[in-house]
Image: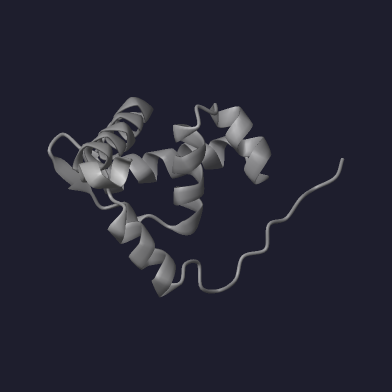
Length: 109
């Protein structure tokens, strides 16, 4: 059996990456979720969740155990003060909808 090791640099996220994330916050209810508080790996897991992946598939794609995925999910939910995958996806959808509605009409043509 081959084992895969993901090597990450000491700096998990650059300041520029954090600024980009901060500028594209997820909305939940009427509040913005501070996704910039998530680690780089938590963001990877969150993106996989938003793509509709199961924990098992996320684990295989990121070369981590399913238990580690569950651990990251719990941390994501705690940090964002949400309780489920559904809340994460809904927050993402609300942000995209808000951004689409906020686009001035002259930019749509």
